Image (cartoon, rainbow, N blue to C red; front, top):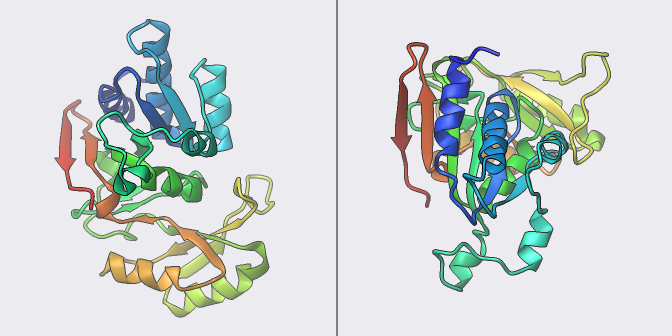
Length: 251
């Protein structure tokens, strides 16, 4: 493992935001893997106490359990009626039961819109982010882009029943679409039993508009566009070892 890996530097910087007694959302993917290791290290050293974590994928859940990170499901969290310590018991506060979620991104534009889902966990990741008070995104400079879609396709999770219909629909929007497959050539199946279509677009001129179009399709379960209103902070590392943070406001 390269100790100077920019992904590692950014991930460990983000983990500094986790404090005792927090409920923490755990992301999925190669960048977040470094964050997961650092969380486990802080727990084992006694530096971090009494946290509970919600995993965004079965993969992360298994790895977290292996590392001794205490887990709780999202359903258990909401059934308990738990609210973040800084929030009053209001209807507005009820939807934020996770204090902080940390996760990576596959592409980031200048407005802090994201493409996520390269690891196939976009649906659960978005559910967890929407249940979080803060969402910290961890990237390295290779993920930066002027416009989304220039460097990474948009993952679109679809019902198996509708895969060909939604593939045709995405192609009608000008996308070059492929059905995601595993290394053995079999269709990739998400934790929720769906397929993923990877829609390659040269550049998305209006992220809000394109996301809204996708959300109108019944066969599309979720898409990998995470709009900037979901993002609290971006931690970006560079090859020279420096780290830059960008902030936006959650609406």
